[in-house]
Length: 274
Image (cartoon, rainbow, N blue to C red; front, top):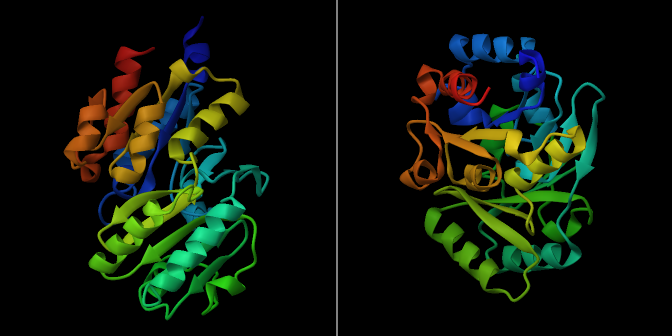
């Protein structure tokens, strides 16, 4: 197998915030150079993020890549070259019912429902409005979560004071057959996902679609919502500032994201796997 074929047999996925980008949400030039070189040699590089396609586009478009991306924390795989999903796995009806039940139990919390095409903010919006304003995302306010159209709920973010968010998480997890999984994304928020759907399952699904063996998959992240990706890919990596739990799972620990962690990881792969 020639060198280009070896590169082409690999799929590398990266988280965005705190991994691809530095803490100021800027793309380090070192990462851009490394990704450009990796792709020019035939490698497949993509992004795996909790962001929806609208939010991800400005980050994806800065890179010299064409591989579909994992969006909405794994609920979807989006092909930016075609402007459409190639895979989508929504929350079940049972999961939606339980999310509504918990949302009503904690009315002071915000709930952001991400569907294929829209973001619906349920509640006062005090905690969620910053999220959509910073990323300039299209959204709709729906005070009663039951008014959000059913079906195609990719994920739900619950925002609010840490102690109330923690209570909501415990309540949802305690429900029998709750039909969804809960991921802690910050002290102020949790993400509720379809059952057994996450960045890791979506990266492997993308590899399957592309005809790439799991043994040739790699991923890098920096926080707890990247855990499933690190557990799923063949070569897991994390940034230097990642929590110790991620470091214990990683085959390679890169530098801090501010110094070009993705470049570190691509260099490791090229020196040890090709």
